[in-house]
Image (cartoon, rainbow, N blue to C red; front, side, top):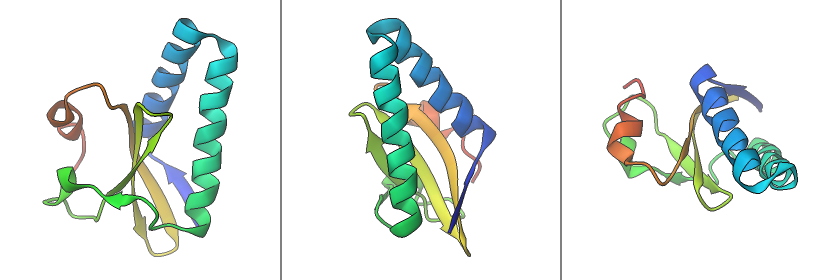
Length: 104
């Protein structure tokens, strides 16, 4: 399986990493990015390991999500032989605001 990142997901991940760096330092940012890489590697082996996210039940794809680092959420779907990471956001924000950015 291969993993493909949507540009919005990359921007969300980078925004969170920058916030962690500013708030907690480089070491914590590196730990966060390492967790993201590890989760991505695990997805290649177990693409359905995330739970089906109820926020996206009316969407075209079956979106799954995984919480990373306690406060970040990676949203993805599986299609054919690919895993598409569609969003990456801070879980402290309102879910409705974040889901409005997703395409149905």
